[in-house]
Length: 88
Image (cartoon, rainbow, N blue to C red; front, side):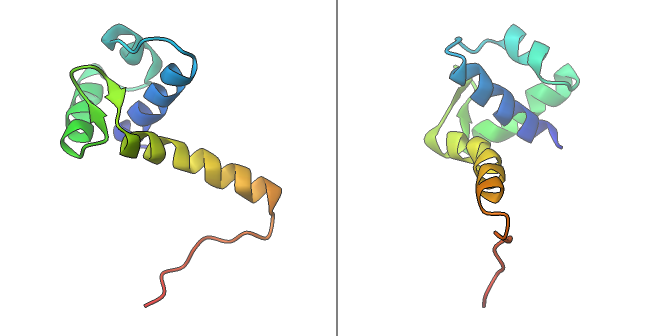
């Protein structure tokens, strides 16, 4: 899993706990080097997935961070659910 995914998931869990996000908390939660986390936050900010100044997810960032959990939950409910294929 890359640093950007780790940062998105960490911020999602921090927000779900009702705790204000902060740099020390984010750096403590994400199992990556400090420089990797900073680079990931900059890249996610440039992509519009979070606001690096406040460490808050945008709506797109929240959806992106939440999507893998939704897929796993749906696969548990519907074991025959398959990955979507690209149809051209």
